[in-house]
Structures are given as C-alpha cells and as structure tokens.
Image (cartoon, rainbow, N blue to C red; front, side, top):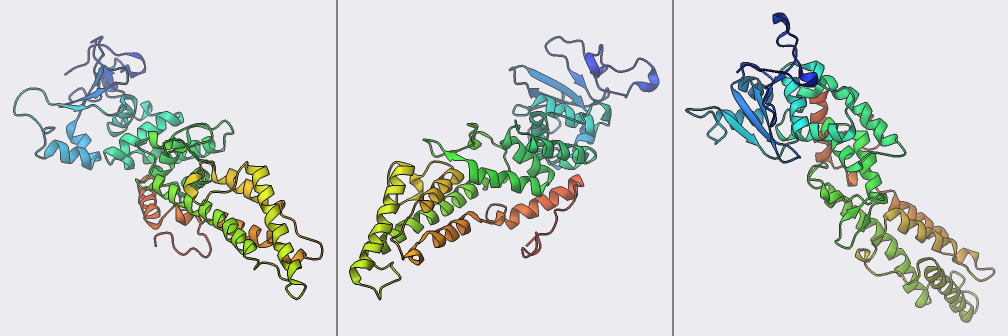
Length: 368
C-alpha cells in the first residue's frame, strides 16, 4: 500500500531518498490510516478514546522482532495470526492510540517522531503499552530522559498524578523513586467509605489497572493496618495497666498515692483523647479511616497532653509511648518494596539502562 497524502508532522519528504524518514497517512478522512511501513503487511486497528478506530500499517516481522508477545500472537495458533486470504488485520481495542504510535515509531526507526519530553500522562500510557507487549527494552534510548522527567514531576509541588508516576518508576526500574512514592502512599492515603485508598487530592488508587506490582495496594493496606493497630495497642495496653493499678513506679509510698498516680495519668489520657479526637480510640485499626500521618500526629498530641502528680515524673508513660510511636512509624521500605519487587525492577533496569540504586547499609543485597 502506498500513502496518498500526509497529515501534520507525519508528512514524509517528497524526495525519493527520504521516503522512509517518517510514517505517512492515507487520505481517508475517518480517520486516516497511518503507515509506519509503506510495504507493511499487517494492519493494527486500535480503538481511540473518542470511540472511532485508528489503523496502523506495520511490518509484522519488525513487530515480532521487538515484542515477544506479538511474536506469540502473530505466529502462533491464535486468531491474530496471518489469515489464509484477505488483509491481515489485528484489533487492539484496549490500547492508547498515541502510545501505540510512539512505540511503533520507535520499532520502525522513526526516532524523530518520539517525544523526548512527554507529559506524565503520555509517558504513563506509553509504558503501559510497552509493558503489555513486553517491549520496554525498545525505549532504552529515551529511558534516562524519561526517568528524569518522572523525578521532576515527583518534586513538583503541584505534582502530577502519583498513581501514574508510580507505574512509570516501576516500569523503568527506578527503585528509589518508586520506594519514595509508595512510602508517601502509606503515610498520606486515607480510606473512603468503600475501603479504598485515597490520596490527599482525592485520587483513588484502585481506579488504575496499572500502578505497579499486583500486590502493591494490598501491601500498603497491610502495612497501614499494622502501624495503626500497633499505636492503638499502645494506648489500650496502657489504659488497662492504669486501671489495674499496676503502673506507678513509686509503690514504696502509700498505696493510695500509687492508685492516685495511675488514675491521674488515666484521667489525663482520656481527657486528651476526647479533646483531640472527639471520642475514645477504637479497638481495631479498621475503624481508623484517616491517613497514618494524621492518626499518628493526633497520637503524639495525646502523648504530649499526659500529666502526672508532683514528684512522680518517672511514672509518666510519655517517653516510652513516644519511643514506641517512633518505632511504629519507622516501617522499613522493605515492608512494601519486597524482594520480588526489587528483582523485577532490577530486570527493568537491565532493559532500560538506568543506574543501579545506591546500597543501603544493613539491608543486604537488593536481590535477596
């Protein structure tokens, strides 16, 4: 097939020696077919966001050479394999058109058509399609620039879409960036009425099919519950000890003073809890829907409000509570960024050429 008329930046130079400079499109108005290879033998039919279809004519061998997934689909016993007669058409109903075009430009050598600085959303969809067809290695020449764009987006106070940013870091193998984002999710996400993780800007993480490893949201939820429950247990265990009269450390004094000491601490604890949170703390972490950071901040304010009777300063539970609170918050990244996650990102770095993360002392090798 030979393209009849080009559109926009897809225009090919008229001189014969430059015919392969860039893909061209046909004159069909609804919508024009994009020819990545004028001698292409395969037509990919992508459903656009607007509802219409966009056709790309490509070289099947080039596609199979760069994508193991397409190789299996096109050369195996699937319905996508070459028909015995008629034009070879393969529908791709679930892919982003612009992302598909970018990757097709890469594998067909039209490097001038590949964006050096795509916006975060475009970058996300490019890597979603690359992941789906196992062709992330094809973006290697652009991976370093794209990783820097992701870093800049993460530092931007306005910020881009953190769910998209997480997947970009995951697919490029940018372990430090990935760990930083998921750690923020752990601290800053609240829970909505349906039990879903919600970012401070109201973004529902479950709305994204591609956000990273399949168990990411589960890991964040488990870590969140572990932290919150450990903090709740601190206060409930202290309350039980105070009510049992077993907390005061000055039991050589009159027994009534020891009981009074425990009751003063318990009373200040209850008063602070009501004043700061409006009600007593629940037994289960499942009843805490605010973010971990917000909950732990209120817990710290409660601790700061605990008082003791005079000459019983050593009986104050505040120092121990603060220590235990810090320990609860010091959840290692390894709780969320598991060894299997690290191994995946290591493989991605081998594909994209990104640098290895700096070793963390005391953590051992990242592949373990």
